[in-house]
Structure formats: C-alpha cells, structure tokens
Image 1 (tube, rainbow, N blue to C red):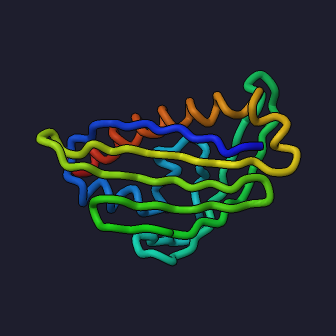
Image 2: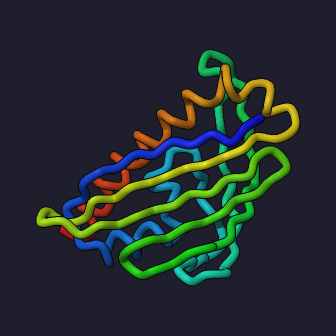
Length: 155
C-alpha cells in the first residue's frame, strides 16, 4: 500500500509556546486526540531523539463492537520550540510521521497538523475502505478538541 497523506489546521487563541508545550506532552493526548488512550507513564517529548509509547484504539467498523488497540512507539525527529515538532511512530501494523507547524498570528497560533502513514499486514486490506475516513475524521475532531483544551488552559 502506498503512503497516505492529509493535513488539517486550526486557529488557536493562544501563543505558539503554550500550544507547543501542550502538544508535546504525550500524557495529555488522550484529552484531545480521539484514538489516544491515557498513559500510566510520565513523558516529556519536546527534544529530538526522545522516545515514548502511547496506546491507540481504532474502531474500523462503526456499527460493530470491534476495535483495534495498538501500542505505537514514537520518536521525536524534529523540534524547534514554538515553531515545529515532528514525530515518527511504528508498530507491526503502521508507520507514520506527524508534523505540527505553529505559526504566530494576530489572534494567537495557526496550528497545522500533517499526517503521513503506511499500513502493514492485514491492515492494508481494510485501510482504504474502513479505516481511512475514520482517521481523517479523528484528525479534524482532534484539532477542534485541541483548540478548546489549549484555550481553556491558557485563558
């Protein structure tokens, strides 16, 4: 299967530093990103080379009680405080790269999320039909949740 790519952006009424601090804390991901589960480990991941593990859950078929829970092993590949942060993730079912770009604006921060992924194993079969729309929808919801959470925390 070929690599998939999509991006989303949202205007956040908060300074880039505050947004960066929130996003680079994997322990807070479950608060805003729909597929991330709460971690029982403490992580800070703003520096290049830092590694962490987060469990995610996907529901490929909305009407069925089937879920795919997976540990993803992340590595910070780029980090420029308040400007950009990039992480790679690997598991036996997926490889991905997520890039966050933070641009200062008069209203706060324009936050852009770019996501590239390649599925492996049996997930290649269901990804185009059952998973892709869900991943894209979760990304949109995640950015809206992120906006609300950061604006509440920095108000």
